[in-house]
Image (tube, rainbow over all chains, first blue to last red; front, top):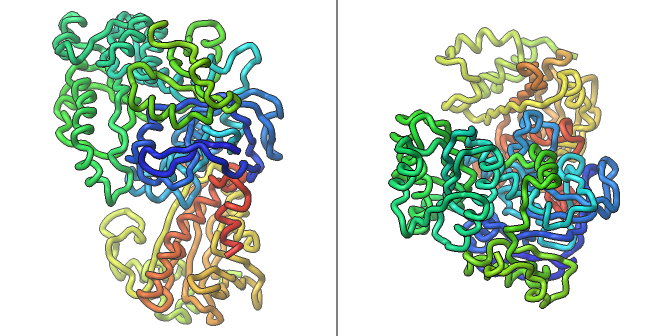
Length: 407
Length: 219
């Protein structure tokens, strides 16, 4: 099959690799119809996450058609499914309490030691996201082997297009859980740092949950415009003193809930080089950590802090005093995708949530490397790239459904 | 099947002293003397102590498996099926006499043969074993089964003491191959958990010939 493979920093290629096979009884093989590039894929692209091996197939946002099933799979050939990026067994303690992204059984045993050393507990398995989270081949490919196919994938009714539902795989539930973690009530002012895909979905979710106002913070004009169209008020941090503005816009009380959808990924997972990675990245890291620091200062006493943004290593100069003295609630974590799929699919079907506004480009899988480059270098206009294995190479221009000007 | 505790202890000789806690733990009668040798200042399991156990390596690990205690006990008690989740165990076959089992285990250079005898068994609670003099490795261990709180299933604790082959060098080599018993035991317990909770052992391989199991069998 054809697949997007990683070979080193900013070196991804579409090449031919072996087709996936059914190995365990609960497996299924999915023929991918749509797959997206995620912001977190850029950290693999930039080579800042260890545990990658040359030839690894990337991609953790994908959907497609069931073409093969293991003896214990509950899926049927021909069904259309969206696959959660978190691999969960459904049988362990964490799955039983719906903390699917903490599944104890999805990361192969021999791959668990490194993250267990760093975090005290091993990470669960994820598709296409380094060998720290299992080393599973990802979805930016023609076919994917999906373990525990009786637990993860959700069956999609025929009348919904791929673009309507693809983001159930990660960023929509991630934005939704970010808002849920902010425990939003009807009188609340909610501030969201970062208007990337997760931030935008968090804004949309917070409004659906009934927040009185949502304030979006970023510096990319186009992304801020998308937030405004969703119904948020916007702050461009290059133009405005954010903390002062938030105090004024919340009547001098401070915002009730803050969501950090920026993150500070890739400060290194491996314990032995972690500090070095932090040092190397200190320019970027300090910059990005400032979103969370700012959020902690902006949130009111007794408010809520939600962190969907990914942090991998450590940070310093952290406003621990503000965190303690203000009596805030702090909630974090990778998304428990499986928990939200049913409800969010229903909200897509009844029109409560729209996910298509985000997509700036459709590309053939063959042009995936171009997609990575532009998603990385033209963040303002390339808001979300959807790859289609079936689409003819070079058909990118014609297939781009929306450009910046149209939005 | 369970043997006289004191007999076992005296035959084991150095083990009871060298392995300290495990020697005491394996044989119930020796527990009191083990305690006299130095009561732990806290409630933590002895195997988590910062001090060592002489020439023996003692390690232990607990996992919680979301299945009833009897089922988990049964899975461990079927010795011949242990290679299903014990990656380095090639086979377990009945040995010479009741409660004796012959193990063929992958080692840094080829395989080692081990014969164990079950020195104590309490249904759904405990299995303890030690190597006999027909073994190439000097080892003993026990596995305990307890109900976890509420509906969390069963807590399984495996404790293994062994004398590293060929001293430190041997252990260093073993570690390189990830075949040190401490790592083995931890990984094996997690594989048992996977097998019982999910019916399979997770692999991220894309093709059947690329699984860890397939590669080990090939090697």
